[in-house]
Amino acid sequence: MSAKQSPEELKRIFEKYAAKEGDPDQLSKEELRLLIQAEFPNLLKGPSTLDDLFKELDKNGDGEVSFEEFQVFIKKISQ
Ligand SMILES: [Ca+2]
Ligand SMILES: [Ca+2]
Image (cartoon, rainbow, N blue to C red; front, side, top):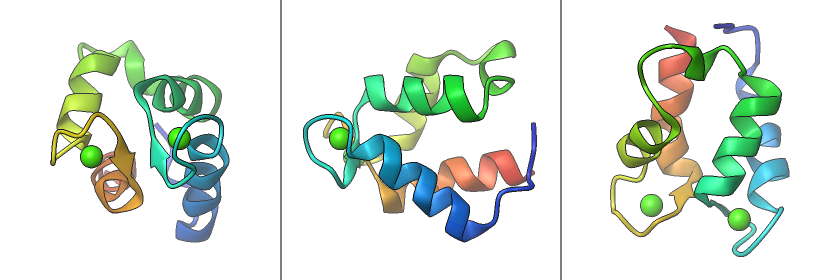
């Protein structure tokens, strides 16, 4: 796990992947998968799966992760 990304870079990464399909301000599960595979490939080598992570991040349960919800992910990778 790496914490070398600055907040600006993390926002840029979020925006890059969120814009791939559907709402450009929201990450779908597929977009989250692409983001993690490309940028944080070590993150899913532990016991937690993409489904678990997505559920954890999607606090309001609308099936998409907003940048606000993404803050939880940023905290996770900064630990
Ligand atoms: Ca999207
Ligand atoms: Ca959500």
